[in-house]
Amino acid sequence: MNQKNQLEKLERSIKWIFKQILGTKKTYAAILAVSEVTKKNNALSEYGDYFAYTQNVMVGDVLLQLSKFFVDNKDSHSVPKIIRISNDLFTEDYYKKTGYNQHTTYEKLKSELVQMEEELDSLEKPISHLKKIRNRDLAHLDKRISNEESRENLIQSNPIYLSDVLYLFDFAFKSLSTIRGTLFNISFNFQEPSYIYELEKIAELIEKEKSIKKDQKEVI
Image (cartoon, rainbow, N blue to C red; front, side, top):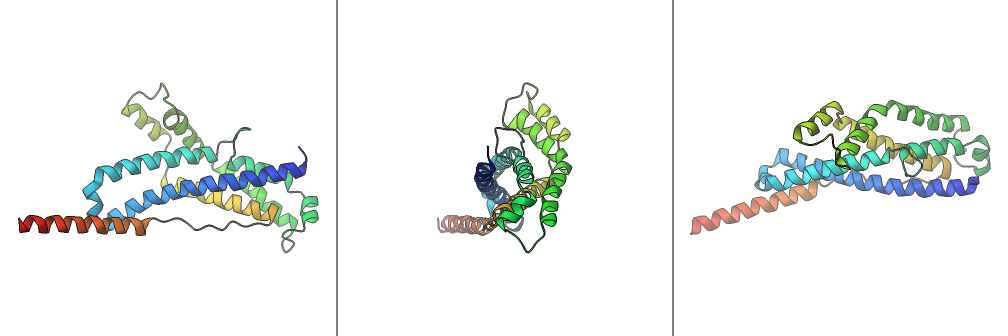
């Protein structure tokens, strides 16, 4: 495949996986919104089973999708693959030919891409944990997981912390944004999703419903 085709394919991959990551970040934002609103208002506890269930479903989906973004194989769109291909394609000749980012030296831009690969290597442990949980529980009915105890043992031996999830999200957004800006001189325009306002309105409606029911009982 010639360089022109490689670049076109790379840009399509960047746009597609960025869209997928943003969608998963919205799910993550919905999880956080339930937690944040519950801390300030106990109205959601009226439907606690529902919100707990949906949170668990969303957590599983976020971990499943996040693992996909960091699976590095020839048949997948992934952050590691995009970083590696970008490093191969971004040469000094390409820098001079396109004229992009001439306010920054080639050496500095190349160094940023190389550092991404190094940072990716440092994330091997949480990525490995994600893959194991995905392969044995989230995506497959692995024969080694036959009850809640074996599932809990899997999770305990492959912990995924909130800080890991946030870091992987940030790393993915930062890497794809930097690569798109460096190789194509295009930036992403997006807004961090938040659903706290929506959940607060739902909590207010629940409180209002409780108040109406209480008044009706008093009238009876």
